[in-house]
Length: 57
Image 1 (tube, rainbow, N blue to C red):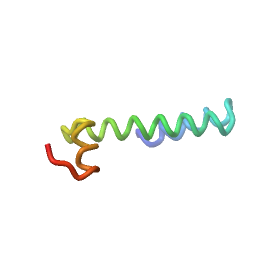
Image 2 (spheres, rainbow, N blue to C red):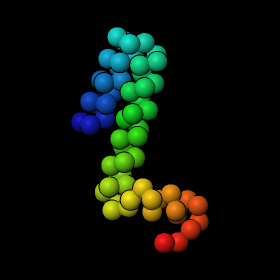
Image 3 (cartoon, rainbow, N blue to C red):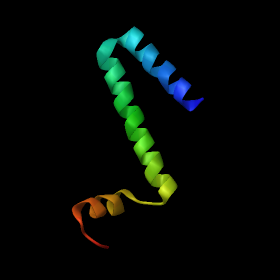
Image 4 (cartoon, one colour):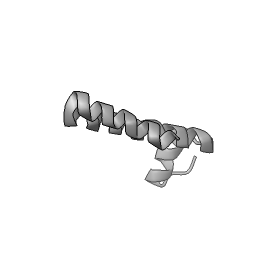
């Protein structure tokens, strides 16, 4: 259901706004998914960035 809604949003953005709007909506959707994924795991952005850099808190 969520995938269908996201696909419809991308389709409308592409149809009415062109390819640039399609890319903006896709990028913002991916950013929102990533933020939600971090929130569900209970990980803060600083903790995530520290783990990428190999630093321990």
